[in-house]
Length: 277
Length: 230
Image (cartoon, rainbow over the protein chains, first blue to last red):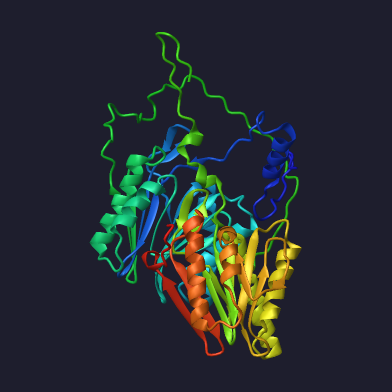
């Protein structure tokens, strides 16, 4: 337990002490009386489709905090590698950090081996990590990309289960999006058809699900490169701001200024040499 | 929601109603899996449905996982657990066969599964059927249900759909069937189970493993054998 005035070097890796404490409290007090606080879930619609020359990923851009829209332009398609992108649904913080961790590890691998990472490696790393944490990391991820073996689309769930399929939808709006995909998906589509299909799937999710909304982002990954179109389509229901909310510095007059210097003592100095080999 | 005379109380939508219930559930392969021995090999089969609560997460799953060149496992139970176990056993078996410099026995693979499933029985939900061919005992089927038991059987079924076909299996199976008869028998059994069990469905995946190699086949949903009561 860290006291606020003593600096402790944090232990590496995730710490689930609070989750176990919450689970213990809930079972102790009976779960009708005490409900542990739930992590923030961003209701979402994400989808992915494999087409002739690559993979198209799509996502909405709404992040909700209970009934309020916290972020109208949230980026749910995360960069993993130059040829791999990942859409995340579930607990917002978990998807963000998991994808960042994966991206760092794959960058190190690329530098060591001189190769672009493969989708199957990224999916395996995610699967290993999420299985080890037994569902505590609430990340529902759609991994898509192009590597030397072809165009691939994987999904990895929070418990560590993996599926490889030609088209996918995830998130709270996925039932609506899946309906569109099941109806109109064909193998080996052209790029424009694929983009329109993913857009329509996300649009269905936005229309039918309260947790999804605002704009639609699309990411097209091919052998040649990545086209990250953000936003691909803006919300039809945007409101116009009535006035400007930015104020110039000096609008609020300063009456009194008081500077208090803090007395700080150097308590401890440690030097850690970096391995720059 | 209480309605008073003349007044009307509206309830704010709870957040838990925005995020659907199935996101809380783990992904399960509620399943039908089956394996049959015949003279010279084994026939294995499985349905293709993976569910998360009431939602079908994947309707074209492949539950027949290769462990080695002539050894397969059929997975039922938690998708994550069985995938992780199968990966671990594939690694261990590959290592073992390099060290022994010969193809592994099906019995070895089955025991590796059993050791993992028994040791971690509190944490795992995995019902696995191991089937394959080796040069010592030809075709063999071993079942490792939840809990970590290991037993060899000429016919083994598993998963939630298996309860519906025990009668069919017991009455129809006879020793000494040919490979084609086994394939037809497995196809019919899977079709019957998929018809009755909500957690089984999609397509029926079959495979025949013999000394010569593997033969995969898929029976699409509309090509499954039909029965008068259906």
